[in-house]
Amino acid sequence: MALLEVAGVGVRFGGIQALGGVDLAVPGGGVTGLIGPNGAGKTTLFNVVCGLQRAHSGRVLLDGRDISSLPPHRRARLGIARTFQRLEIFSSLSVRENILVAAEIRRRFSRDGSNPRKVADEVIELTGLGPVAREQADTLPTGLARLVEVARALASKPSVLLLDEPSSGLDETETSDLGGLLGRLASDGMSVLLVEHDMDMVMALSRTIYVLDFGRVLAKGSPDEIRSDPAVRAAYLGAEDNPGTTEAASAIA
Image (cartoon, rainbow, N blue to C red; front, side, top):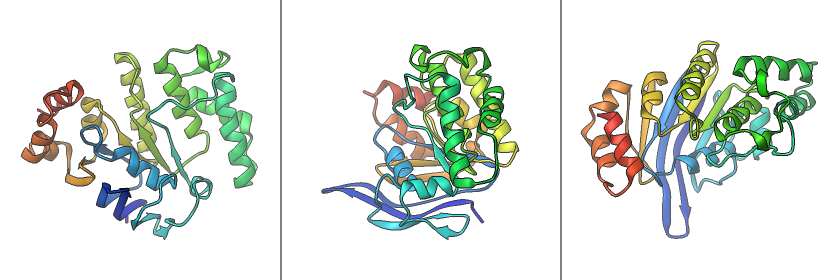
């Protein structure tokens, strides 16, 4: 059984259907990719899973439990954490303080006796942020700031981690390091749902990839199946005036 399941989810904004009957399953202990052209509905789907966007139809289930009616903070307490396409960090705090905030919040609701400072130190070591741990977050380059956001999400010790374009702004080395981190997290049992325009990363990490197009699942399969799917190639190649789309199509090819 999938740890996270989206079943028949639909979302409308006025007369526009942003999502239409989306089904998606994220198993435990692995990376599931979610790709698609710009405006396909990927972030909207994330918002539905986290409770930031109400679905007009369908359900969201976590470990078999229907959480569709729960507010965002309740879903977070049950083990869902995420990052955002638009960078969201506490700019006036240090890197360590950003992570410590999440660890403190988790201790309050989990009541597991964890030491937030120890948790923060462990996450800093895991993510390789030690050299900049004392730096103020808004002084960091974009790539490192995104890694801080990932680290803050990890400090809540989630069972499901939703990452919305985490490699945006990262250089080649940082992207490789992030890919290694996600691989280790998955090996340790974490479920990762990855929205990413870096097709090399998605193809290398994902067991299963879902492709959204105009709010619907266009294709689902292994990386090899997605690479060879004519409908997927057409969806990416269909917007030749969009440079990002064309680059993604080349990567799929």
